[in-house]
Each structure stands twice: as C-alpha cells, then as structure tokens.
Length: 442
Ligand SMILES: Cc1cc2nc3c(=O)[nH]c(=O)nc-3n(C[C@H](O)[C@H](O)[C@H](O)COP(=O)(O)OP(=O)(O)OC[C@H]3O[C@@H](n4cnc5c(N)ncnc54)[C@H](O)[C@@H]3O)c2cc1C
Ligand SMILES: NC(=O)c1ccc[n+]([C@@H]2O[C@H](COP(=O)([O-])OP(=O)(O)OC[C@H]3O[C@@H](n4cnc5c(N)ncnc54)[C@H](O)[C@@H]3O)[C@@H](O)[C@H]2O)c1
Image (tube, rainbow, N blue to C red):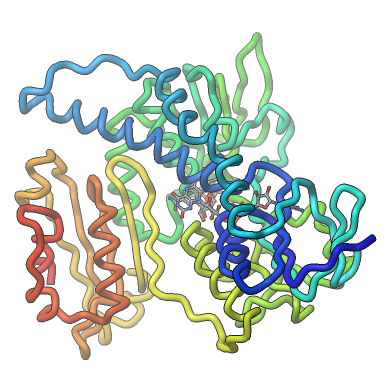
C-alpha cells in the first residue's frame, strides 16, 4: 500500500530540516534520510570543522601572546581534539531525528528514489505526495586520476584518529584551506597543490594573496600552477605525482569541489531536468515539475552553497507550498574562510565594483596598527569597504583579520538595512571592540 503525504522532503540537512520544520504545523510531512540525520553541516562539515578550528585558532593566538607573557605552548593533542569534536558530533544524528519526530514529521531512514513525479520508493515501499522537496545536498568530488582510490575527502579528515605526518590537499578552495590551517597548527607538514594561482575564487586576489603569505609563513607549502596527475603507493607512503615533481605524503585529500548529489535519486523517472551544476530551478526554486522543489547544495544556481542559504531556501519553499507566491530574493550573503586569520566577504564583490568605479568607492584600510588589532598582534589585518557613491550605502565588504566573523555579521546587517554612516555613528557599541571601530571605517 502507498502511504500519502502532503509533502515529502528528501534529505535532512540544513535545507531539508528547515523546510520540514516550517511545514509540519500545517501539513502531513515525510522526511527521508539515507545517512546521518542533520546532513553535512553538523556531521561532517561546518560544525565539526569549527570545533577543531576554535581550538587551533586559540592555540595559534596563544602562541602569538608569547611576546606578552603567555607561557610556552606544547604540541596540540590530536586525539583529545578529536574526542572534543566527537563529544558534539556523536549526539547529532539521534538529536536531529528526535527533534524532527517531536515536531510531528514522519522520519524515515533509507535512500529515496523517484518512481514517478508524485511517487518515491524507500526500502521497497512507496510514498506519494502533492509536493516533493529535494534537499539531497552535495558530495565531495574525488579527482578522476590514476590512483584515485588512495585519495581521501574532508569527511575522512574530520574523522582522523591520528594526525598523519605529511598531508597534501588538492585544491585551493574553502575545504582545502580550512583543513590545511587545522592540520598545520596541529603539527602536520602541509602541502597545497593548486592547478592555477588562485585561492578562494570568489574573494579578491589581493586578500587571498595576503592570506597565502600568512599561511606560508606558518609553514603551509603552496605549490602553485601544479596539477596532480596520479597518486602511487611506494613502501607504505603515498606519492603525489605532479607537474612540479613527486611528493611523498601520508594522506592526500581531494578538495576540488562538491558536486550535487544526483546519483540514486532516479530523477529521470520523474522527468526532472539537470545540468552540470545540479537540478535546474526557476525563480521559485521549482523544477520543471512545478510541484517538485529544490533547496540547498543540490540546486543549479549562482548562489553560494552554504548552510545559511540552504535554511533560507527551505523556509522560502515551505512558504511557497503553503500558498505565498513571490519569486525568491536573497539578502546579502556573508561567507568566511575559517582560517587563521579569517577571510570573509559579503555583498558586491571587489571585482564587480572595479568594473564601475564611477558608481562605487572601494576603500582598503590596513587596520593592523589600530588598537583592536595591535593588541592581538594581528599586524596584517585589513578591511575593504565598497560604498555606493550616490546613496552613501555600504554595498560590500571584505575582512582579513583574526576573529572577523562578528564584524562580518554587522556589515551584513548594515547592507541589508541600508544603514548610512550617520546611522552607524548613532550606535553605541561595547568599547573597546571591533564594532566600536566601525565609524572610522566610513
Ligand atoms: C568540510 C566542510 C565544511 C563546511 N563549512 C561550512 C561553513 O563553515 N559554513 C557554511 O555555511 N557552510 C559550510 N559547509 C557547507 C554546508 O555544509 C552545506 O552548504 C550545507 O550542509 C548544505 O545543506 P543541504 O541541506 O543542501 O545539504 P546536506 O547538508 O548535504 O544534506 C543533504 C542530506 O540529504 C541526504 N540524501 C542525499 N540523497 C538522498 C536520498 N536519495 N535519499 C535520502 N536522503 C538523501 C544526505 O545523506 C544528506 O544528509 C561546509 C561543508 C563541508 C564539506
Ligand atoms: N567556510 C565556509 O563557508 C565553507 C567551508 C567549506 C566548504 N564550504 C562550501 O563547500 C563548497 C565546496 O568546497 P571546496 O573547497 O571543495 O570547493 P571550492 O569550489 O571552494 O574549491 C575547489 C578548488 O578546487 C580547485 N579545482 C577544481 N577543479 C580541479 C581539478 N580538476 N584539479 C585540481 N583542482 C581543481 C579549484 O580551483 C578550487 O581551488 C564551497 O564552495 C562552499 O560552498 C563552505
């Protein structure tokens, strides 16, 4: 017998959770999960990464304070660091499933496949719905080269029982840089093999070059314009064969992007169309089957693939299903590479602003000597603001600094609220703090 629901949600990551939780008060909802409840972010992404990052960033900062009387630091204990991370991650799947079930959604463990545009099959049983929300996320890409079976992913890194002595990362994106930062601080010899000379493609090159210099000074070895063509095994070690020579390693991580997790969904049975970036959507996040919606990392769209975005889209689609009819519009979307220091960006990019300097004023302010940064030995800290000349509104910002996330959140708020320098000067912020410096940045 086929059980009938108002809405079926496929995937319980930040996108699927948000959609299910927003629908369940008014609808009969089924949510299906083939792996760990909660999806990538809390199990093998943002949250475990930031548990590790918080410790290593504090450790690095404490080392900087040696000049200010901090006693000498020993080596980080990797097994305790991992145990700390697991104290959080081990309770995530059961906690997420319990919370979904408590909200009234029906939870089902198993892989969902489309049978037709209204019917899915899970564990041999079929389920029907008026609406289906695909929130199946993305998965790490293993580079297709000889020896690819030796390559590991971010998921493997975040579970390492022991820290390998030499770690190579293929790619210069968020995953490679953030994990390289952790591995380096924890004592590994770290190499980044990047096929071009670009890090974090969405960020301005001046800031990413500066970040690469700082990470290089800490010992991370960047191999620019270097393609890894094969991986061999030689007497227990792995060898990265590259256009710049052979490099023996103990672990090599493929960090070359996260393609949409299309496999296994059998989208063709529902006639749903895809492209190389994922499932195609319209401005209401509908597929070519209007009752089938797509949210989060699995969608083909030019929006950053982030946890906050997946949740925003989940709530938007829930409202659409419940009858609100308006195309999706996104607020400013901030993102940060959690490296030491952090590099974050929000709003209009420097590259876009540079194309129209009559309209936009770009100001790069080195703040390393400012009180808030000098007391942290954050000598290279730098804030870039992009202001629309006519209105005086902030439309974009880039921050390279220790602990820049709250400043980034405030910049995001300023952009969304269209606050002017006068509005900002009117605020009383905690003094001294990064935010009490704000009026001096405009
Ligand atoms: C190492 C790492 C660090 C990250 N750090 C950050 C960060 O600091 N900040 C940030 O904003 N973002 C970060 N991200 C990205 C963030 O994790 C994703 O953008 C977010 O998880 C996307 O949510 P989602 O709901 O679209 O997909 P996911 O979280 O991937 O969830 C999809 C779920 O669908 C399930 N699924 C797939 N197919 C099926 C099927 N056929 N049937 C049933 N279930 C299925 C999967 O098992 C999975 O649980 C990071 C990612 C990684 C890998
Ligand atoms: N702090 C955060 O917000 C955060 C952290 C981690 C991941 N994420 C999300 O996860 C996504 C995936 O992260 P990622 O680092 O895997 O991808 P990415 O897109 O950020 O970087 C991929 C890197 O791989 C390189 N690359 C691409 N194809 C290659 C090839 N064939 N050979 C060698 N190198 C190649 C690219 O030049 C790039 O440097 C991010 O775009 C982001 O949306 C976000």
